[in-house]
Structure formats: structure tokens, C-alpha cells
Image 1 (cartoon, rainbow, N blue to C red):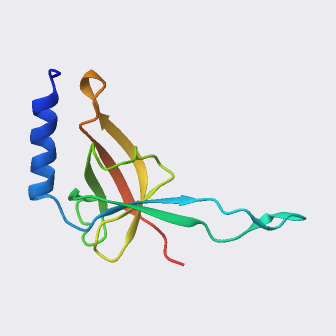
Image 2: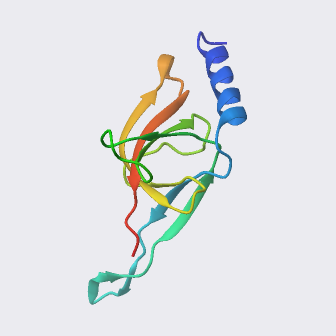
Length: 124
């Protein structure tokens, strides 16, 4: 048993108990080209969803901003995938968010979790 096992277990339990339920990390794989002669035309990617409770807090962009601010999101270390900036986050509020920065909490080479800075993903 490592030095940080108890800290990791407590962190996971707190995130599960206090975190927002129904949140998902979205990983989209690139699709193969529809036509081999036109490799720039690719089909829609296939999304893979990793569901986990996440702790979400608003980060106002300035003192007067309200509503759709950037978000800080705490993701547990056992979500099943390592977050990167090519992923999106669904916070169960009807919007998807792009990851702009990642801070990893990994003492003793054991992933406790990640803090993600997110901004609203543009709608099309």
C-alpha cells in the first residue's frame, strides 16, 4: 500500500459524493476518408463517452461576467481515460466544453485526478 492510497481513496469518495452526476468526457476518433481520392473529406468521427461525477465551479472572466463563464472541473483519477486538450466535456447542463488547460494531481505516480479549465464549445 502506497503513501497516497488513502488520500486517493478519500478524494474519489468526495468527488463521487459531492460531484455533479451525469458528466462525461467525450473522446472523438477521426473517421476514415469517405473517398480515397479525396482524403480531406472525412466522415463524422465516432464519439466515446466516459461517464463520471465531476466537481464543477464557475470562473468569471471579469468582475461583471455572469452566466456562461469558463469552468474549473475536477475529474477523478479512475475515470478510465487520461484527459487531454483534444477532448470535450459534457457537464450535464446542455452544453459541451472544450478543455483549455489541464493540471494533473499525480503524487507517487498514482493519478488522484485532474483539474480541467474549460470554455463553452461553439455550437454549429
